[in-house]
Length: 261
Ligand SMILES: NC(=O)c1ccc[n+]([C@@H]2O[C@H](COP(=O)([O-])OP(=O)(O)OC[C@H]3O[C@@H](n4cnc5c(N)ncnc54)[C@H](OP(=O)(O)O)[C@@H]3O)[C@@H](O)[C@H]2O)c1
Image 1: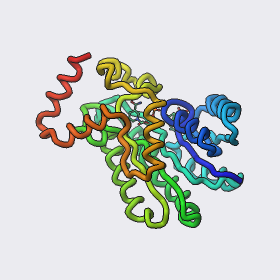
Image 2: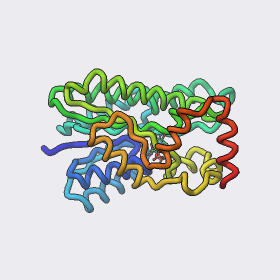
Image 3: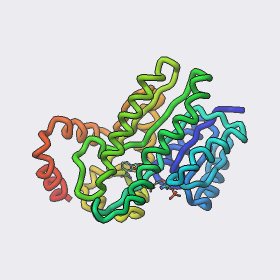
Image 4: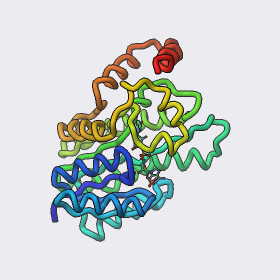
């Protein structure tokens, strides 16, 4: 049957890089995202480059039924998931009062509730097998002060870090580890898709990292069973600075960084 990894948001960016690295380590892969044509293309690439099986299920994680659809698909095909990568995500680049409650609910479903739902569905068999790994792709935004736009992005990522901790507290003695991965600015489709390319462009070059590098470090930390992964030295230092900086100085730090572009 072989070992399987499920990667959400694997039609592009960090998710697809993670899927390729896991395939190179011998994991059969289940891809999921909304864009079916990308999933077909990506699964073909994985099958032809790595000696593993790769299947996909297309669905929208803002739909309440999607986690069950993914789980049922895996169960029906006997894909026993050993690694669950919760990576799908986006941002709403709009001030809080301009978004509808429906927008925010969908957002929280994709970045938060679907992560909880998928973990709830796949954890029991991991516990039964006494082995399993969960990765939650969070963000350094979990440590940063909320910005004037992207109001719920940082807060939901912070919640996901705590959720990941909670999985570790409850299931690490049963052989399961959860790793909250907190990347900083990474070259993917994220910024164009979400209308925040200007913010990405205004960042100095040393703060922008490749998705391959981020995925590599994230997987290495996950296999070591680390509860927190902050890919690249730059962002390890960045998070340290965020942790020790008095909150009233944050606006000044951000101003300084955008002057350095
Ligand atoms: N790039 C960065 O600078 C950065 C920094 C920190 C953290 N992150 C986090 O990294 C993760 C991956 O983002 P990325 O940078 O790789 O961006 P990306 O290239 O835009 O990838 C986002 C992935 O999420 C999927 N997705 C978005 N909405 C979805 C929905 N409603 N249902 C199902 N899938 C959905 C997209 O696929 P479809 O459009 O095909 O559905 C895509 O595969 C996100 O959680 C993001 O918050 C990114």
